[in-house]
Image 1 (cartoon, rainbow over the protein chains, first blue to last red):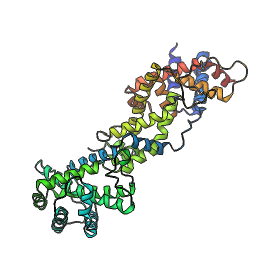
Image 2 (image 1 turned 135 degrees about the vertical axis):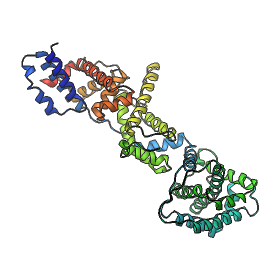
Image 3 (image 1 turned 90 degrees about the vertical axis):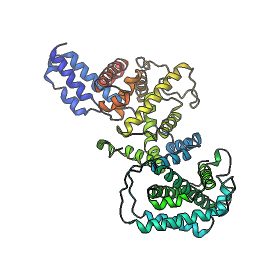
Image 4 (image 1 turned 180 degrees about the horizontal axis):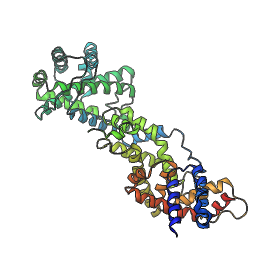
Length: 267
Length: 201
């Protein structure tokens, strides 16, 4: 093969990358080298024809509702995925080194907690949700802790705009976890309340088998959003001395109960 | 971890990062946006394999399991196609070890694919070629290519990936991809010689 053949074929290969422009290939047919080289002319013609054949292949027909079916089957195949994913979100939130307070977060958190408090259903919901006995007055202590301590925190922290927070030290980890457990319990209660408002049927968290997965996506999403915001907020607040006071009031029974509440959420 | 600026605007990367940060709806959007592309790629790579929908599901299952450790070090489709390629190769190896029986096609309605033995050099001798014959023969010739060559050709010709991106999917250098495609074209020219002559007439 001559040098000019090699150069011509390199030129041809460069044009064939991706989806070549047919006009470029046609223009190459006027290359001087082809006047004296039948082999390269034949190669060019074959490559053009091959491009034409490849381009003539129709797009594959997609099965109807493919993405919906995939999502459905994924949820059936991985019944633990939602809780696993939620746990991972919790981890992500707790492990953030630097966080900013989203605009309007304080108002939304206050509204969510106030709604739960006003409806006065925390004790009843906790009793239904958990397999262990609910200590007398637990929900009251949770409400008091959430409400009063937040009020204090809000009054001492400016709420407008974003607030960068420094990297937390290891000693804050347990506090953050405890805060997350506390918020998890109220989140479960809120979730259950929303579901029960919408359905008269048995509690999906207490049902058994694969169908026990939450089947009220709107309620689920609403509370997960709310819970995520609370967690986000609490992970910041745990660095505050005010939050340390709140958590020092928790006794071992409370912590065990809150732990179970998170397990119930995961089931 | 900061996202490399070059992938910041990649829609798939944005969705993955949103999902990783807790936006559950982002995963649904990933499935809606990319399941068709995964299915098309599988069809082009495996032919009319009866388990393509299962493989689409398996692809997204792997994404679910990789959620926590995902890092945007490439375009999302590069990562996605790499998963598809690995699954496809595994499936090809599994298929080679077991007799093939398609459960979703009645007899007489077969379409060409790697599971069906057909020689693209031996088209219907009875008369002029029909469009269906050509399509079937081209698919068959592609399906007969070695796996790396086949995926390289499919990604280059049908998914518009650059050689560098194909290299990331196949874990090869750009130069190696160029060589793969060169050899694949040589094989296709031989396998489809009859059709190329038809096309030239």
